[in-house]
Image (cartoon, rainbow over all chains, first blue to last red; front, side, top):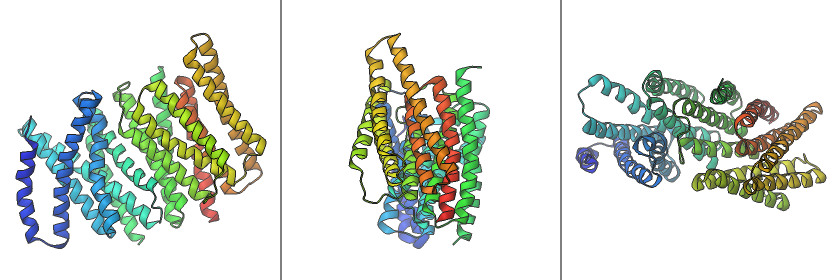
Length: 209
Length: 263
C-alpha cells in the first residue's frame, strides 16, 4: 500500500509553481508532464476497478487490462488537444512527449516507493524500458494522427486505429516482460528499438514536408 | 507436433507476411501521398502485424489465460474498422443505401454476436467487436452492390446461405453428439464453400481484367467472409482460414496498389 495521491501532490506542487515562470514550449511541455502524471494516477484507479470487477488478479490485470486503460488515459487529453486547438505537428509531438514522460516518471516513482530503490542496474533497465515505452507508445499514436491529418485520411477509424496501435505495442511489451528469460530481454529492448525506427520515420516525414 | 505449435506457426507466418506487406505499403505510400486508400491499408497492415505479434507472444508465454478486455480486442476492432475504411475509400458508395442488403448485413451481424456470446460468455467484448463486424459487413455489402459483383440470383443465394449457416450453428446448441457433430461438419462445409465461391469469383475477375475497384470489392468481401469463418471455427479449420486470410492480405495489397496507380 502506497499513498500515491500524496506522492502526486508532492511532485506537482513545484511543477505548478514553475509554470508561472516559464513560457511557450517549456510551459506546454511541463503542463503535459503534469497531465501525464494525472493520467497515470487516474489510470491506476481505473485498472484497480477493472481488477475488482473482472476477478482476474493483480498480475493478469497488469498484463492484459492496464495497457488498454493506460494508453486510453494518455490518448484522451491529446485527442482533446488535437481536435479542439488544432495544433501544428511540432506542438502535438511536444505535448505527446511531455505526456509520456510525466506518465512514466510518476509510475517509476510509485514503483520505487513500493519496491525499493536499492538496485541501480534494475532501475536503470526499468527507466530505459518502461520510461521509453510510455513515450514511444504515445508518440506512435500521435504520429498516426499526424499522418492521417496530413494525408487527409482523418476518420473515426484512423483515431481508433492509432489508439489500438499504441495499446497493442504496450500490451506486447507487458506480455514479453511478464516472464523471466530471453523474452523479457526482448521486451526491455523493444521500446528503444522502436524509438530508433520512429526517429527514422519522423525524419522521412519531415523531409516530405 | 502439438496443435498449439501449429497455431503459432500459422500466426508467425502471417506476421512475417504482414511485416513484408507493411514495408511495401510504406514504400507505396511515399510514392502515392495523395491516395487515402493506401494510408488506410498501411494502418490496416500495421494493426494486423502488431495484433498477430501479440497473439504469438500470448500463445508462447501465457496460453489459455482469460483476457476479457485486452489490447488485442481493441487491435481487432481497429483492424476491422481500417479494412472497412480501405474498402469505403477504394469503392465509395456515398449516400446510396441498399435497404435489403443493409438489413441482411445487420441481421447477420447481430446473429453472429449472439452466437459468440453463447460460445464465450464475454458480453462486453463480443458486443463491441460485433458492432464493428456489422459495420464491415455493411461496407462489404455496399461495395458489392455498387460494383455489381453479384447478380440478383446470387444475392438471394447469399441470403439463404447466411440464414442456413446461422440456423446450423444455433442447432449445435440444441442437439448433442452425434447430431451436433454432423451439423458442425455441415456448417464447416458451408463456410468453406463460401470462401471457395469468393475465390472463384476473384479468379474470374482477374482473368477478365476487370476494374481494380471490383477486384478490391471482391477481395475485401472474401476477407469479411473469412473473418466470419475464423470466428466460427476452431483447431484445424481455424488454421486453414488463417492461412487463407494471409493470402487475401497479399491480394488486397495488389488490388489497392492497382487502385492507387489508377487514381
